[in-house]
Image 1 (tube, helix red, strand yellow):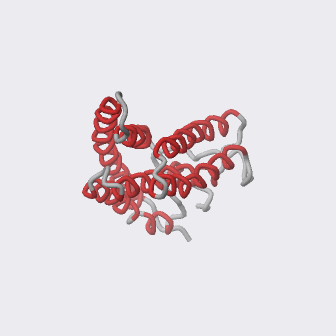
Image 2 (cartoon, helix red, strand yellow):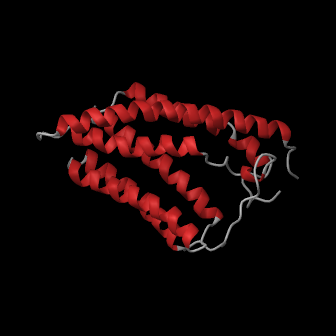
Length: 207
């Protein structure tokens, strides 16, 4: 097994097809831009506290998150780097948002610990997966739903902290989606865990 494979090529899925090995494709550049927005978001949130501009950064991140995958498939620019960058950017944004909002006392720290604990749990699988020649587990639909809920709910929660007539609507909707997103996030995490353990059990260590 080569490092260019993912667990999708395991016994329960077909081998993934990478259309290009190039690094600087349009989808990858969009992912780089999304990653570069993380320190900008944290500075806006914790420094001058320009919350509306911080929300705008999150909106731009959400748009690039959609288009990098869409363009990769449309222009045949699916790459191994892109498939690694995309989930890393998602995890990094979720971490930056929840820690930043917790520092601002918008989110309780117990929620931050709960979300981080899920990723720490899955990180325990990485050494065994890499020993078998794979970098990560394939993303499934429930995981995408969970990430979508969290990435789009927290900006609503932040808007709900502002003082304007419709703030309560944003706050209520945002917190409702946060709770559902957290539930789906852990549900997907448990499925990933079982999938990873099953694969590790069935696959010998790669030479």
